[in-house]
Image (cartoon, rainbow, N blue to C red; front, top):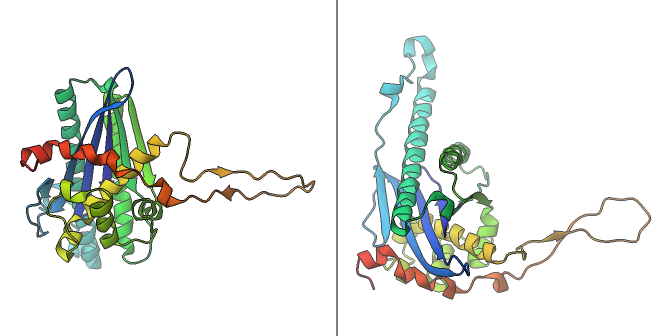
Length: 294
């Protein structure tokens, strides 16, 4: 049996993907070994450098509009041509992003099945995505990312319907909760997320080149967010019945009929942060061995 945790930080220009698997003993259900892989999907217009332990996939932004016949005739639609081009650009991004991400996931699952000689009934999959907060900074882009998330979820649901893995679950994690968990600061910025990755998760062993420079904060923030999504899910599952935020009704002896507001139990996030030793087996990953880091 194997648990596969997938963290997806979606973006049109740079999507971060973290795969973390836990091989379980059949009898005791304890973890025998674990491995981690980092992937980054970027457009061919983005400038990037080689980063050890990060598999980078560059997809072409070639026009699909010729084949799809999406362009409007200016003589017929007059002023609609500019809006049409924007639609075409988004259509290309949706199609290529969803297809590429799905193919990366399928390739990873096939590799796991071959390496461990497992059938679909021996695989538990947990897909974790970060929710989006509409702040008005770029409304069209944020709506687009939400739609991208929806399209990808639909494709992954189809994947489960065809393969029928033992477990297949989605989780959408609010950004504030994820940041609180990972940095103990619900409004943490990209720099703070990477700083926590380095200091609390021994991130230098996982991505040796990472530092707090603007270059790596810019290029690796999506990878770190995807890692944080996996870390949250792994830790939360281990809590079993102890939820991060457990809402209970307040008992009252009052005879008056009134609505009772739920009480949210306060949680000390410092105590809920996972033991970094839980991730020490990450240094046994295939990628690290491949590049002879260890």
